[in-house]
Length: 244
Image 1 (cartoon, rainbow, N blue to C red):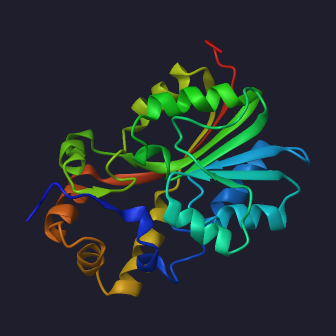
Image 2: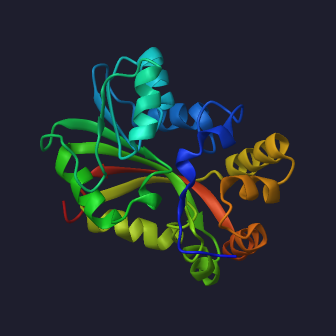
């Protein structure tokens, strides 16, 4: 039975134990790939918006010579990050970032923009705090069958799936805020691997959704996902498009 009570899937970290080193498809290999495409110089200031428990921040601090910062709205996830030694984090939403204008070289938001309450305002904030030609690195879900979007919007689970859009809508949204899109890559193969890891961990996706929320009908969730045919993408944009 579907109710009005919503579950924040991204806070259910125990569901993803031993499923890679990050709670998203592609893991750190996709993060490395994106940063190689950006070719940021040593000392660059990078913000991870929606940093969660800080796995990516810790990895970046260990493997890159960047000044790495993070923010997340979840006190629960930030407490986990702090417990694991990640210190440069602040509790904040993407729509209201406590950073000075034009001071950051790159913003990374992985499986985060699609769960924000107002992605348009968040993108305004990203454009505000990035320097000219600064990079926006975005990994997230997208919808390959727009006819299935409505069913996913009705699910009582806050996850990347609920806010997914078609590719053309995502690119238009990014460009509206003064960014020029440099890279769009489909990484749905990483999503398939991630799904297989979840099945291995839980026995089936139906069991995963049962454990994720007692308020969601697992069959309805899986039907909605099948209709929308979600994919996974990497987008890299620079501040300073035609309107920037």
